[in-house]
Structure formats: structure tokens, C-alpha cells
Length: 149
Image 1: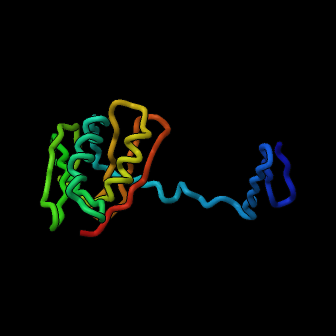
Image 2: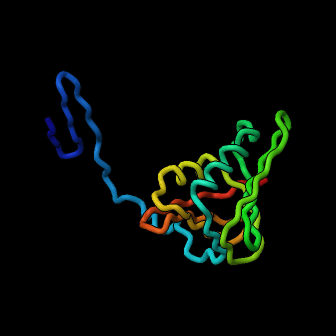
């Protein structure tokens, strides 16, 4: 069963009741945080990138950071920790732009890659300090903030 009051929604299944308060204001304008001027573009195989991040992420420790270095035809994913050591893996990609290295929380990137539908994903960067825009070619996008090293 479902019912609604002026400010709440109620759901009942058997003897269980779930209620939720409705927002009183407008949803924030999320479009403002989507980067529009990221001109350095990499296109990489989604499954290969996901596998590389998982392998390299094994050494990252609790901070879950990984560096992504973009050059003319490759992206290198690397991570390091004092306790375990370091790891890096390079993948072929199509890349247009200047050489860049950004550090991100790799679990956020994996979240996107696991949800994406297409075989290839696009990674758009502006510089080492700006948010990175991930896209799978359809309407699915993800914005990941960079970490300071």
C-alpha cells in the first residue's frame, strides 16, 4: 500500500511501514558541476581499464588512490603504499591532448566502470587540478574529483 501526506510518503508491505519526508526545496542544479571545458580526451576499453585498476588497487592501502598518467597512446594506472610497495600498468588508448597525470580515488572510477554499458569509455580532463568527466558514450556520465598527492 502507498499513501501520501503533505510532506511525507508512506509505504506499507504486510506489517512493515516505511515513510519518507519529501524535500521542501528544489533539487540542486547538478549541471553546474559537470565540466564543460575538458579538452584532453582519452578513449579506453572499459573492461581492460577496470581490470588494471583492480590489480593496481591491491597495493594502494586504505587511501584508495591511484594515479592516471595520460600520454599520446596510453594511460598508465599506478599506486603505491609504504606497507605493500607499488604497482603500475599501462593500457593502449586513443588520447588527444597534452600529457597529464591526475590522482583519483580508484573506487569512484570503478563504480562508474561497473555501471557503464558500452565497451569503450571516454575520459575528459582539463588539467591536473580539475574534475575528470567519465562517459560511456550514452547518457551515463560520472564526475570524479582529483586528489592532491
